[in-house]
Structure formats: C-alpha cells, structure tokens
Length: 141
Ligand SMILES: Cc1cc2nc3c(=O)[nH]c(=O)nc-3n(C[C@H](O)[C@H](O)[C@H](O)COP(=O)(O)O)c2cc1C
Image (cartoon, rainbow, N blue to C red; front, side, top):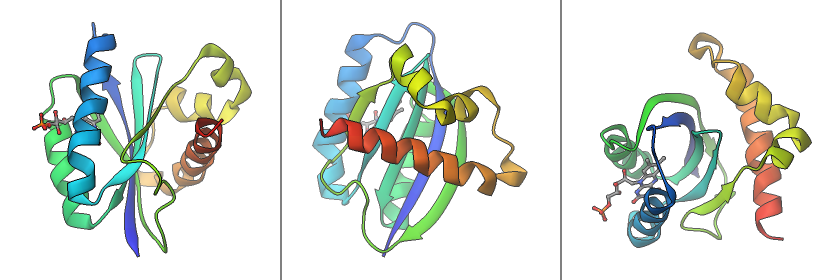
C-alpha cells in the first residue's frame, strides 16, 4: 500500500519556463531517494500534482512545496491509500495542459474553475483521479 495525495495550487505570477524546468529537475533528482512517484500538470497558471509514496515522504515534500515561493494557495483535495502506485513509471511525470486539453477534458474545468470545497473534498476525488489518469494515459503517447 502507498498513499496518494492530490492537490492544486496557483503558480506565482511571472512563473516561467526556467522555473518549470527547475521544479522538474528537483523532482527527478530527489523523488527516487524519497520513494516518491507522481504526475504534475500545469496550465492556466495552476498546478495539479499527485504525489505517491509513504505518508512521511509525502508530508516532507508538501512541507517543501508549501514553503516554495513559486507556488501558493495550496488546496489538498484527496488523500487515499492505493494497493500499488498508479504513476510508478515516473519520478515525476509532467504535462502542460493546452487549451485543447482543456476542452477535451471537461473535468479539468470543473476541477480548476470551481474552487474546491474542502468540506466536501470527496466529491473532487473522483474527477481528480479521472483527470490525472486521462493525462497519465496521454503522457505515454
Ligand atoms: C508545484 C510544485 C511541485 C513540486 N514538486 C516537487 C517534487 O515532486 N519533488 C521535489 O523534489 N521538488 C518538488 N518541487 C520543488 C520543491 O518545492 C523544492 O524546491 C525542491 O524539492 C528543492 O530541492 P533541492 O533541495 O534538491 O534543490 C515542487 C515545487 C512546486 C512549485
């Protein structure tokens, strides 16, 4: 069993290509040693990330990300246990969401455009998984 955390956050205004590259480089450098895998999506100045691994490794990474000036307004959407990692192939997969991606995946709109209500976070769990799995499948193409 591993834990799986999904959150969304806002990119700090002015975040650029070099910032994204540095975030991914850090993930590829650090995640294998922490036993973390996952997927990061970026679009419309927002992130959605799934982090998989032990609870301790996930919390350590969330501490870092919460104090990272490149992002803010972090909203944890779902934490659950899964039998096996769903993103095991990547220390951190990445995909930039294009406008075409947005229209092809209405769940993305729901996810990003309706502010998540944490008191009802389970309602966002399924669309979150739906969206991430859709993009996981695209990622391999
Ligand atoms: C949205 C977002 C996602 C991130 N995801 C990861 C990650 O999966 N792994 C990681 O090591 N750093 C990630 N970071 C970067 C960390 O906040 C931190 O800068 C990094 O872990 C520091 O690594 P270093 O000490 O090797 O430079 C992320 C940052 C942001 C803004």
